[in-house]
Image (cartoon, rainbow, N blue to C red; front, side, top):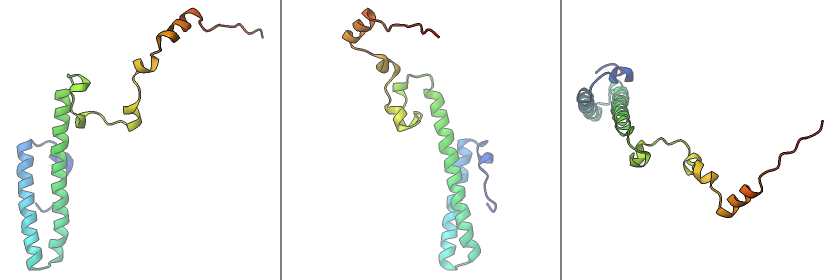
Length: 126
């Protein structure tokens, strides 16, 4: 695995292939770390960084595909049944906001007042 792995190439692969690639990369990283201890070769030191980033790339693609498949599975279920980490984050303020029904709710007394004394409409003479 000499050159850098591209994420768009990884997205086409199956999960089993990705895990196999991950296993190869991890074994390569461990061998590079052993080589680093034996002889501090500058080219080996630079390769450790690229291998670590390749591992991160593979793991990211695995996690993203897994999450999209889970979201598709839970898409048909009600909002309360979806696990918290699969719900859309939005912003904290939006998540805490009242629902439309809660916002428009009025007490019985206020409803009676609005019913008996509706807002007056005035025609303004120009």
